[in-house]
Length: 330
Image 1 (tube, rainbow, N blue to C red):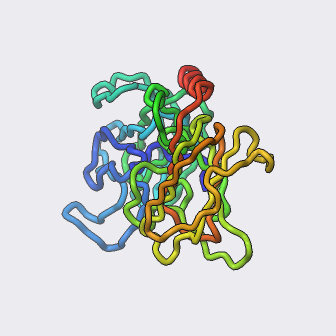
Image 2: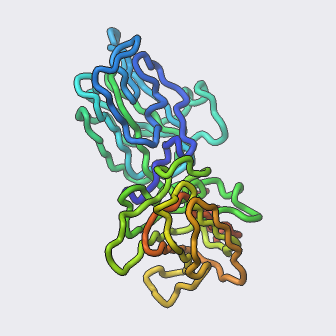
Image 3: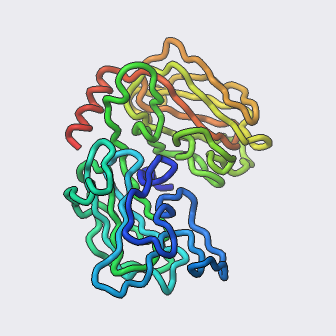
């Protein structure tokens, strides 16, 4: 499991805002959260159908590029240029740059932006997840993938720390665990069928495949997920959504919170004690008289699948100050 979310993913509202060429396959495929697939000898009007971005063969100087708006501004740690299924038509080189333009800039605004290299021009391998570490720097809102000179790329992944604007989180109830607010899965017992990042993704799960599901346990233990909240907060409501999980939902679950050190077993307390769950149901539980927490642990008994976890609460004044300092310093 990558410990950091893909900020460019369509699941987080990332999108392609410009591409100079999409002759064979649209650049929107770059941010598709699903792994790329390939069906040999599947031809359309322009040739073999690829689930990726593919440009025509260049007969002029220059190179091709696509600009991606991150779903949430963030600090980038890793970039993946995935050329899966592109063999004789992948670009031999690529580069990734980033910029920060707040608001909702148009492509012409981005053309005039100041771009900073994240991944300088590097060689690519075909039919491969090309992974590049990035020295964490400033918060960015957009990335530009340049390929030299042309070719096909299946997916672009931009893993990093979400740094949302704290002005949108001040006051009232917010989902403290939400990935788009800066919540982060930092550990889990098992993710055989689905990543725990799905638990805190935006929106409702449309299928069972958009949730977190573990293998069947054959021991006396139980499965769990550990999250660092977007900011310290006082939890008021917990939602455990087992939608689409029918014969494989957990029989019960518990949610606990911790204020400081998650490795201290004495620092944890119940937000929701062990409670029976129903299959294919959106469960909502009020939380009263709880102290502020920074960490949350979901325990599923004994195993199974869950679509979403929501932890609604109020960010503490100190937590909001930390978010503001992080935003300004980044």
